[in-house]
Length: 345
Image (cartoon, rainbow, N blue to C red; front, side):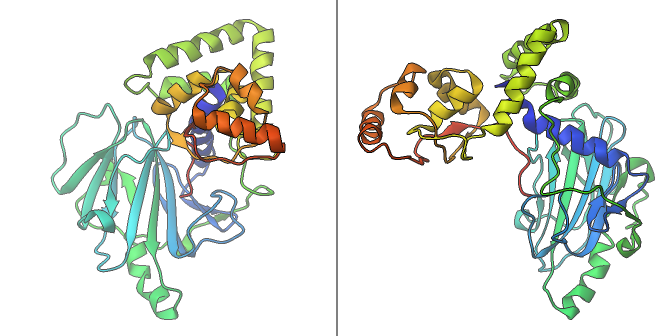
């Protein structure tokens, strides 16, 4: 449970740590925009050689940047994009979007201020609006639509040059520009597939600090206390820490939806076997953590009942079907809990 819940928080923290090592806005491997405290932008479509985002859009020009809003608020510019589609996705440390900035929201051109949860300063003159992150760590992903024509590649250049994020202390009310084609290139470490931002072997060593930087949402106080008590015990007892790490490694090997979840009629049963929670507790938890339709295959119906699942008529029919056919069932009929994950951006 702690691993599934905390996975996106550690994922974001590790991404931000990697970005913070960039001495200035750069292109990592010549293909990924990387910046901390500011943004970096591409000037064309994202390359298939990048491993930072699993499923990027193929018709937009991307940008990216992490920000420590407890240090200083950040100003970002919105030029006049006209009829062109555009959006600035702003995420907090939980990967939740905390603003509605884009063409679909009717956002007007101007200067906007991104602040952290504890910021109480006055709104400077010339700022169109203030957006507040629920956490001190924030991540921006501007996306600007571009037609794959020579004419539009040229037309978008002056617009992209005005997509600039910078510290509030540099704000002077004037639209700044940046020639993103001149970003320095830094070599990227070799990687096969998407970069692994969460290491199950070190996850429980990293989670305590991450939880301190991400305050609980309303209603999460008890959850924080419970997970913190386990982490405190693990810090004092190597045997407990060993068990936690083994569970994390096993969870990575047996994610719902992969082939290791074999032969089950119930997504709830699969999650119960992975998390150690009873199925009825998982169903309750799904209402507060979130739900997702997932494809799973794991245990026979009798095991699901042993975990405490309510035997509904539909469940009984499914159990009989499996027992009679011994077939594998993939179901999306029961909503399941999921930790918020880093979405396709």
